[in-house]
Length: 189
Image (tube, rainbow, N blue to C red; front, side):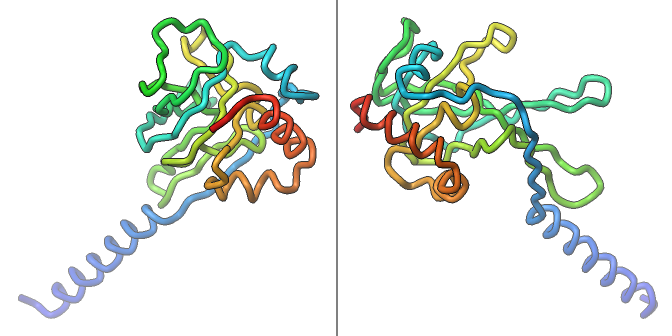
C-alpha cells in the first residue's frame, strides 16, 4: 500500500477518535431565567403542591426534547423510589415503589459540533442517583406528569450527598432558609 494512503488513513483515524472523545466529554450548560414562585415558608410550599414525597433518585431517566418550529424546549422524566408519601391523593402511589417525576432541564445533542448542551430552568439542579430528597410536586395536565414545583423551590436533598445542589444553593439565602423550614416542618428520614 502506498505510504501516503497509510498516513492519510492513520490521520483520519486519529481525527475520528479525537472527535468521538470530544463528543463524549464536551458539555455546555445554559441556564435560562424563568419566572417562578418564591415561597415564604414550608407550609406555603406544601399548600401549592399536589404531591409531597420522600424519594431516592435512580439513574433511570428519559430526556424529552420538543422542537416546535425551531423553538426547542424540553424536560427530563426521572424515575425515583418512593420511601414516604407525605401529601397526595395519588391512589396508585405506594411507599417502596417507583414513580416518575418531571424535572425542569433537558439535554440537547450539538449535532455535528462535538458534545451536548444541558438547558436548565433557573437555578435547578438535576436529581443525583442514590441521593435522597423531599420533593414538592405539581401536576401538569399538559404533560400528564408531576413536575418539581417552582424549580429548585420544590427539591431538597435530605442526606447531603448532592454536591451540585449544595454548591449552587449555598449562595442563595432564601433557598437555605426555606430548606431549613422544610426539614423542620416535615418528618424526613
